[in-house]
Image 1 (cartoon, rainbow, N blue to C red):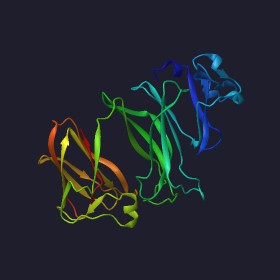
Image 2: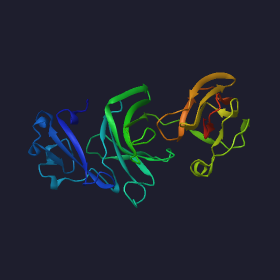
Image 3: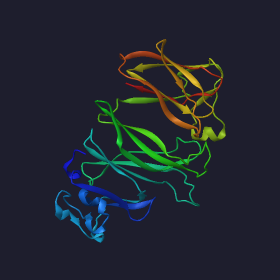
Image 4: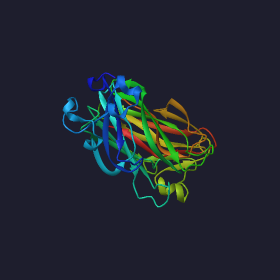
Length: 313
């Protein structure tokens, strides 16, 4: 770790006693040379002010002041240093509605905060929920400091590990440790607009249709086909395009063409995982501004889907 505030100490954060839906985080630290002693008297707790000064710490946990307060929105989460950004990230996760029985959430929300120091101040930078999973929920996210990779001058990929419920120990169940790659951007994304799959500007060849009642409730604008050779074509004006679609056990292979040229062969089939939506499976940027055409072709008799196109201006 490059930062001075993490050079001599090991830090640990905790909620106010709740593994999920806690109210706040506090921060403790210990001299890394004493960590292996596992002696609670070696720890001190952040009390406010400048965390680089000893005056900002106390040996009494009762003196600890929250580094982040968000009632019922602080699930037990990690703080992870991102060297490429010279920043810390914290994930606070929570149920969006009260549980009526254990543990069957309606939706889980992940809030991402960043700060220059482990003690903050923390600012919210992004939030998303797990509605992209058709059957189940994700909880308990953890960022792994070891698995970080700079993708480009403006992008860093970090591995987030999380688990899922319901807790059925079956191959297709979510109760496993899953890795989800996060792309952290150091520059704003280009301005873009979203064109849903059922937009009349998207031309379809073959038989395409909406999902059944359950799927349509989650993805009302997505169109599906399961005929080999069926295609979706969209002419757009801009400098880039992304295809957003679904993946799952029922899906197969597709081909993506841009301006008549083959660009990608993609497999949307997944084993041992529920159906997921809102997946960006293809993107291209840096096109000359003007008119371009993207074409998506189903290359199997399994499902293919068009949820939306995201056009960069």
